[in-house]
Each structure stands twice: as C-alpha cells, then as structure tokens.
Length: 253
Image (cartoon, rainbow, N blue to C red; front, side):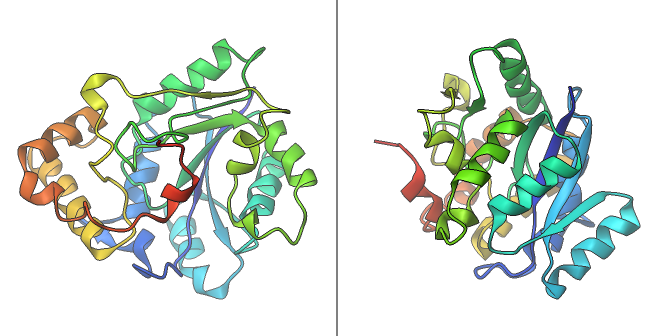
C-alpha cells in the first residue's frame, strides 16, 4: 500500500503571482508545507505537481536544490496531471494538497488517511472539504488512486472543469463512496482563513508563522493557529472579506 501526497503548485497565480515561492521567516511557503507534510507518520512520498509552463521552471529548480520530488504536467488540465502522477508513482492512496495551504496539519492528514484505511472496503474518498466547517486552508483530501484514474477516463477532454481534480470523484456518488468529516467544536471556525490567495492572506500567514517561530513552535497544529488568530482578531479580520472562488463548489447551505 503506497500512500503519496501531491502538492499542486504553480507561479502564475493571478491574485498573488509567485506565491508558493514567496518567503516567510526565511523559507518559501512551499518549503513550509513540505516540511510539515514530512512529519506525517503514514505518508510514504511527497511530490510537487507543477506544470510544463516555462514560468514554473523556478519551482522545479527549487525542488531539485532541496531534494524534493517534482512532477510536471498540463497547466490547465490538472485532472490529467494528477492522474499521470498517480500512475507514475503507483499510488494506492492519494493525499491531494494545494500550494496555497502551507499550514496543512500532518496530524490531521494521518487521521484522515487512517479513516480511509480503516474503512477502505466501504469508502473511496474522505475529506473535510465538501462543507466548510474547518478553517479554510486546513482542508485534507484523501482518496484511492484508482478512483482518480477512473474519473480521468470518464471526463471529456474538453471539459473546462478538468482544472479541478477531486471534484470529479465526490460528484460521482453513483460510482464512489464519499465521506465528509466535519470539524469538532474546538476547530469549527469556517471564517478563519488560513489559505494564501491574496496579499491579505499572505499578511495573515506571515503573522502566524513568525509568531509560532518566535514561540519556539517549529511544527505547530491547526489548534494552535486557531488559538493565535482568536487571540488576535485584528489580524484574523484582515482577509475575512476576500472573495473565495472555491465557495461555488461547496455545500455550505
């Protein structure tokens, strides 16, 4: 059973160009995320899934310098990119991560992987991303690699929604058993944004990481981030009104 986490990363973000290599406390955001994922007890491999766009050569160069695995694929057809990655690395269980979420919590990742492993005979996909209950930016998406390969063959090549990946699994409940896990009360903060899509988000992220570093917390949990942001409402309010494009795909009614 091979468990692999991929991180979708590119430099052509429209609202905050180059964000995954923007530095906080001396490290690019992408490095923060990889180092956090490396604390997982269940992940066997971490692969940065970037594009063939020459603009993303910088990501490849960074990964090569750091000794991180990197895979390149189509910039817009992200579904194909990730399906190809799953085939190349012979992935049984895939943890789908995003370069704009550097605070991915390895403890939560292991919890969700463990859930899928325990229920693998009855569940194909487990996440907390179908309904927003956890703080955005702390999403965990785990599914069987074969499920993504299957939907990649079903979705029309011209479908514009190929820019998305796991959406094609969780919308096909006729084919796959899907489970969404909601946040416990102490993490039920859907209005605390821990993702980085805009300059406002980057300001909040910088505050969080620098404060955790100052307190000596090199690897810190989402619980600690929640407490920090609740204690600093002037910071957590900075990005609260940013338009979030992903909301159109969430079932938050």
